[in-house]
Image 1: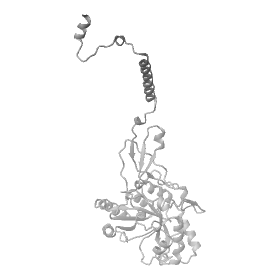
Image 2: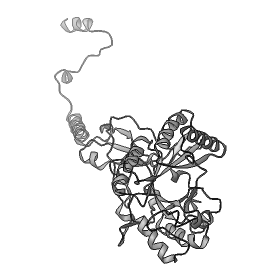
Image 3: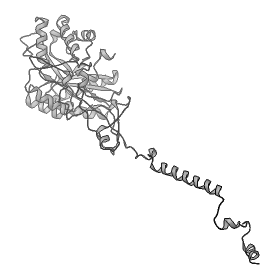
Image 4: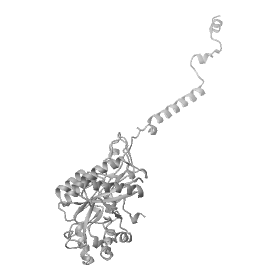
Length: 393
């Protein structure tokens, strides 16, 4: 009766266990199989628990930062990496390939930062822009001379100020005569926007000091070579003037003296020289020397008889020519009018180049005009940005 009562009380669907099962016993074969299964499960679980977890690596921080320009021959020294938490900085160019590199400093610290660098966003590292690239220097009796690096890099490329690369209206302004007046030079470097190219007269003083100040402010710079004008020597550019009557060797010695006055410049600009630049025989050795050294040549455009453009193409020298001299009249209104004409030229053909001197009126007019021109969508670029470069097609 007891068993019958229990059967009645048992929920429907549950079968009666055997006597052995009710006591927790299993047949020997089933016990052995169950034991092996348990061992396998434990082994697999241990392996999973102890192995590496590739899918649980900490997330890597990704930061887009522009790589600063090196001074070369190194080209410029490596820039400091932006913090991993910083926002991406604006690139100066609109397109260009990307290069991904692991930042060794941060990697060594174990934070796994990946820096994405865009070569199109290369800019000057102003803290070292005044330092010459030793690979671009040839020592001479007169001083350091610019030279192409062993890998082919040119001073024109290494020391050039970056620009956006956009196709809009571009205006290059070159202000020369720096280092002649110490006060005027300081004013020009401090007041003029960094996009303005500065040219140093080889007759000036403390050129190295002024070069460093200009480069730290972000200016691209040129050296002005004294060339023979008409009415020479009544009109005299100064010491070591290159003349039509001198031999090629003499003129090259004088040119090298000019080139050795400082470093970190992209090219050479004429200082006077209407007679010299019109003589192809006199200009030819000069242009060949500039091509060999990787420098650009800027003709201020003061004479239509210049043979410089044809010779530059022949010797693969990057070449630029001024559209107008902006301060032939040293009057603020007249200077502003010339600058407006430059803008009109730039809108018509894509770019324009104006040259002037470091007079107070010129510096003030250029500074105020640039501020307004930028609002109108005009980009102010260095001279290297408008030079025709035979080596780049």
